[in-house]
Every structure is written in C-alpha cells, then in structure tokens.
Length: 165
Image 1 (cartoon, rainbow, N blue to C red):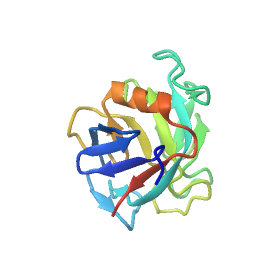
Image 2: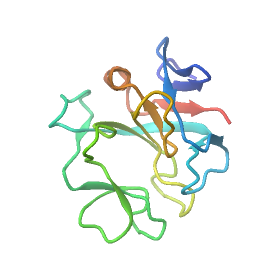
Image 3: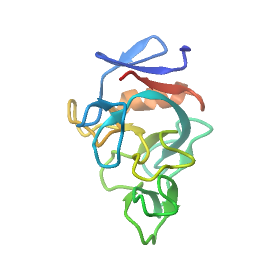
C-alpha cells in the first residue's frame, strides 16, 4: 500500500491520513462479483478516470473530464461497449452519467472489469456522492459531497481503492 491508496476500513475509507465515512454496495463485499448482485468487489482497483459536471462544479483536478449531456455508461453484458463510457442514443441498457440528482456530479472510475470487460462480471465501480449517510449503493463506494471533492483534489490517476474481502 502507498499513501495515495484509498483503503476501505470498518470506519470508512482511509486516504492520506484521514478517514472518510462512506457507503458500499447493498450486497456487501464479494470476491465473486456478478452483474446485478449490488456488491462491492474485493480487490485492489486502480483509479483510471475522473468525470465531473462542469455546470455544477469547478474542475476538481487537471485530469478530470467534463460529463457531456449525452454521456452514458453501458451496463448491458450483451453490449459490445459493455462497461465503458458511450453516448446516447444507445440501443442497450445503460446508466446516464448526467443525472438530475447530484450522485454523479463527480465520479472517480475504477478499473473493475475494465478495459476488457468480461460479460456478467459487473459493470464499473465508481466512487461517487452518496444519497444520504448509510444508504447503500449498487456496488459503488459513495461519500459525502465535500469529502468526495477533497479526495478528488488530492488523488492521482493510478491510485488504488483497496477493498478487503
């Protein structure tokens, strides 16, 4: 482990000497992650991208990419673009990146099942804003908005999210 790694602990995520409360998937932590199981996968997952809503917040880091109104993330195992960012219109199932709520105003993307996705092994695990404290995610790791922004301003590409199974 390095000081740049985010380490999931019972108290939340430890990063650069601080603890940030967080929520994880409703399915708990699993070593055998599957699409739709609502679980957070165990392992060391690299941070490979950062997206943000430029209409709602300033660029959090020089390497952050703006979310376009047509950006989506494919979550359909049959889609050739499964577990990648694509754009609408899109004929397969997907999750809109530009949402009415603030959950994806700022998103850190991990390399879970990416870039060569295995169908059925689960689509991307994001670090994003939580709905409210203690409310579980669909498998992602979610934070208070100000904590997520703090992490985003200090993290570098290639840092890892470490989730022990």
